Amino acid sequence: MSKLDAVSVGKQVTVEELSATELLRERMLALGLTKGARIEVIRKGPSGDPTIYNIRGAMIALRKEEATLITVTD
Image 1 (cartoon, rainbow, N blue to C red):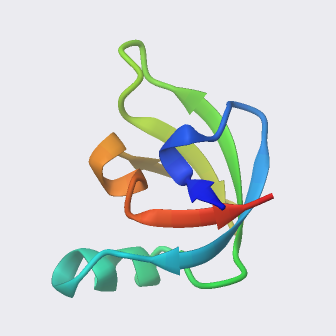
Image 2: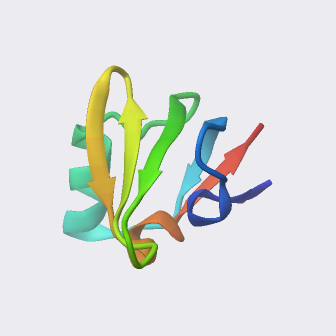
């Protein structure tokens, strides 16, 4: 298992756990970041932040500090 921010561009992973709390957790769940969801890393920003992810067909931008709260597996 690793954190979402460590996944390379072009890779697909599966969500295992969310460490976020309160409003951020609710926002992530509303975006489709639930256990078992598949995520593809599309592109990283020029300075490596934010990163664009494909989550259930939607393109979502997450900052590094948000992505570190998501545990994923291959």
